[in-house]
Length: 583
Figure 1 (cartoon, rainbow, N blue to C red):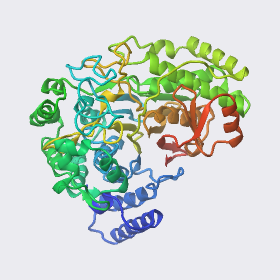
Figure 2: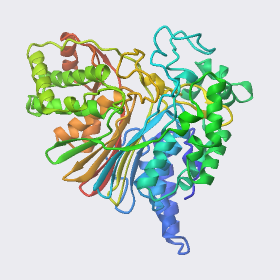
Figure 3: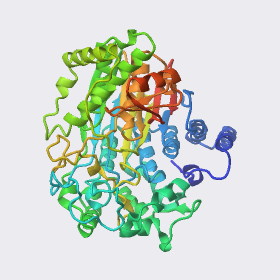
Figure 4: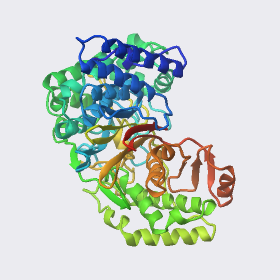
């Protein structure tokens, strides 16, 4: 598999649609030339054909067009990773090979959203035409020295240089980072479901790290606004080469990261990242800068194959990532809708109000009851039971008929960031994979000599030491990643997930409501307007939401604002063709 760095690192200087058409035309012409050149392999022809098809899917909104074929498949998500994933499919790889290669490239192409040192990933994979469906838990783990009360307010100890008054030890700096789980999770996916080795699928990411990506205005603003990037030694060297910030349009290169990934590629394994010389370098960085992660923490880490949560409705079955991911909350919402026969309610305010309250109740339970199930008595069985769904439905309908919201209190905390990719191939394999730093650039600190910017997974814990999601040695924090696969009559038909922090679970709930409950097409399900709540009275609705309902919701007591929701990325098999959408 070859990589054109011009293709992989983005475009500059022309209208996005014009650039897309120019790139599509180039690949079509090259494919046509190859048809006239017998000595060139069919594989090379497929590469150009697939690359042309992948370009069609690069725009932010791509409404359900068929961009794969029975010979290839489809990948959708972060734009640069998506293109590499399509190249892997064209080269004969399966959906898991493609999505892992795409994820590795995305960690380099979108460094603010995620990275090799990002705190975690989670995935759901349907292999062998749905005969085996599993989840992968690559969430971060708190170091053995992590006390439960470390992040109680006010912050413990003096904040390091570079902090602002709104920062805390849980969100910025070395204490906010645990053991990075992304590489272990990707390796596990390849080992069990891929056909390519790590050495092969990581090559495009190495080339991109070595040769660089364009430094955008958004990246420049994110780095320039935080003094922590200058005060941290590793971040200072990476983001301020020659002692000054990168200008918009310059190429951002990370040769140390390229060298580290090359070392892992030479071994065809990520082992050294957790139990080797790279692990020692990471642990030394934590020790030097007041962090808690040790070589023992890294060596004891392992991503895990886990059983996904499942819900069946008619001919559909939904498979989603279990705790500590957000899938439980989504299924709780859907089960509540089912118990109230929500799809039979008349369209209008009553139906919208009932849906909002199902979301609010699930968020109340999520933020007050849930944590790492290995360290707390998470009531998973009860929250997914018919009795609880029926009781919740009765409470909600009583409130709706009275024209009042449910009364309860929750704590809102800002969570943003994340990358999601979905993929499917001609063999019937589907994969949904989400990976993240947490918020923008995560902990904002970098392991010197490795170019490894760390995620801030410890920020996903609740600072209350008595909370089920409190920090603690070896604990995995609650997070918002919810990759999901839907089957119809036992065959996978949809892989979906999202980006956008706490908006992800609600975005996925909205898509699944449309696709599974209302039996709409994937195109319609992604295009429909969405709303967002985290259990309190604040309600964000997209501008396309009916204005009369927005006014009515304000009259019910909600604080309603116009705001975009999560960005959802989905692939579907409908009428024998692969389709993709991203919005």
